[in-house]
Length: 181
Image 1 (cartoon, rainbow, N blue to C red):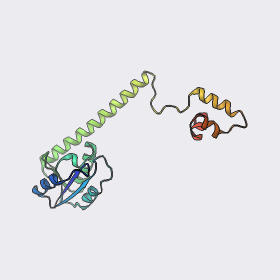
Image 2: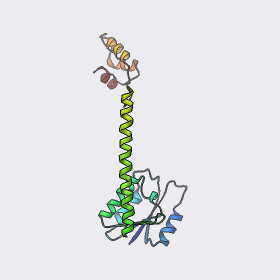
Image 3: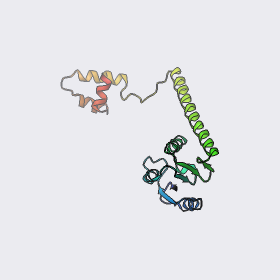
Image 4: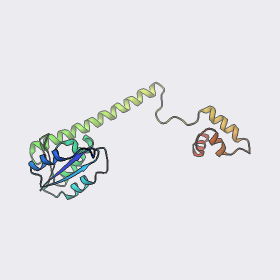
């Protein structure tokens, strides 16, 4: 069975164009939804993936309708392949039920892995360069060293509570405790 999946990003858009293309390309059932691709929760995609059985084919109008990123797309299609389910993209003419389609998909997967490696390398290089210039990553301290000294001095007064000192510096008591330790 060929099952189609169509998605648009907003409720103002509709899936008619995609549904027509899927139907004319042989989709027997079509799951449709209006949700941003960035959304992790896509209920119709979940239903669609659950409905697929070994020997079925999932068809989409374009690759970007299925995955949020190349990594996500490769993950979904790899899972389908493990389950014995084919994949077709109409616009990009990818069909993993053929040898050529599998080759194209595996090239995409390799490119996605290469892209992830490049991003990791650039991130590490950027962090090392920042450290070499004396910069530290992470969130800035809520209290400066002078403020911590003043807080310690304020707490030497037995009438002063940590809650009052924290309020004075506009931080939570937990933040004050962390700075004092």
